[in-house]
Image (cartoon, rainbow, N blue to C red; front, side, top):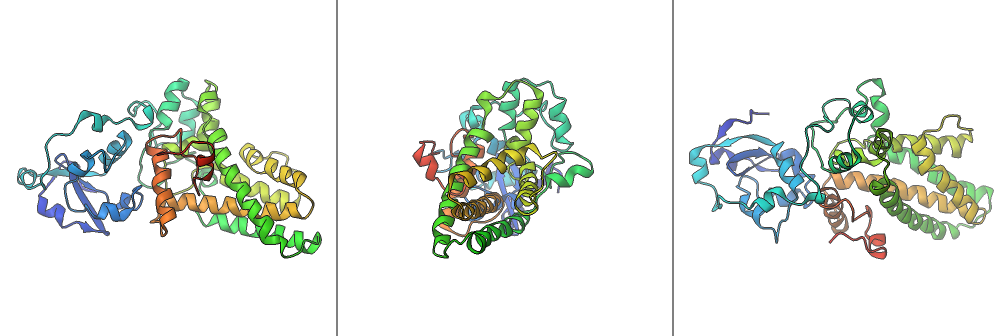
Length: 366
C-alpha cells in the first residue's frame, strides 16, 4: 500500500471509482476502501455510489448516514495519502467544517481506543492472560472494533490452526449430523416421514431462541464478568475476540472447533470425553441432552436435526453478514442490523438470522 504521506490529485482519486478499486477523500486525506466496501453495513453498492468522490458531506449528515466513532477510526486504517492543494480546491462542494460530536461519536458509550490494550499484530491470548487491566478497561476496549490486514494471531504458534475455521467447515460438520438424526429417527425409532418437516421446523425455531439466548446471556455477560484476568481470557475466547476483530476473515472462536469435535464424538462415536473443551461442553452437550429428555423418543432426534441445521445456518449467515454482499432484502437488512450491534450498540440487537426474539424481548436495535 502507498505511504500515508503520498500526495494525490483529485483526478487520480476520481479514476478509482469501480468495484475493483474504490478511493474516496475525507478532510484532505485519500483512502483506499476497496477491501472494506463489501463489509460496509449498508452494502458495497452504497460505497460505490461515492467512489472517487469526497465523502465529508455525506458523513456529516447524521440524519441520513449516521456513523459511530469506531467507523471514523477504522477509516484511518485505509489512509493512503493526502490531497494536493489543487485537489483540495476541487472537492465536490464540501464544507471544511465537521462537528466534533460526529468526529467523537458515541459508539457503544465507550471511550477511545487505547494503545495499552491488545496489539492485534502480536499473539493476543498471552496479552490477555498476562494483562493487568481492570474489568472496566477490558470491557470498554474489547467492544471498540479494530481492523487488521489478514488474520490476527491468537496463539502465535502451531496451535493457531485450532482457532481458525473457514466457513465451509460448518456444513461439512453439521449436514451429516442432521441427516444422521433424521435417518436414525425414521429407520430405527419408527418416526413417519410426515413428522420430519414438522419437528425439524420445531428444531429450527428452538435454535433461533438458543441463538438469541446465548448471544445475550452467555456472550454478553459484561455486567457479571469477574474482575480477573482468567475471566477476561474466557470472555475473549468465547466472544470478545469477535467484537474486537469483527471483520476477521476467519471465525476466530474456539467454539466452532470445540462444538464440532464434541458433537462428532457424542453423536457418532459415543465416546466418553476425558478432557472435553469447556466451550463445546457448554454449547453442545447440555442442549443435546435437554432435547433428548424433553421430547418423546424419535421426535427428539428430529428436533435435534433441525437445531443442528439451525446452528449451521446461523454460522454461515453470520459469516455472510460480515464478509459477503447479501443477495436478499432480508440479509441486507440483517447485515446492517448486526453490524450496528458491533459498531453502535453491543447491548442491543442480539438476533443474527432474524429479529424475532429481539421483538419478543424488546431488545431491538432501532
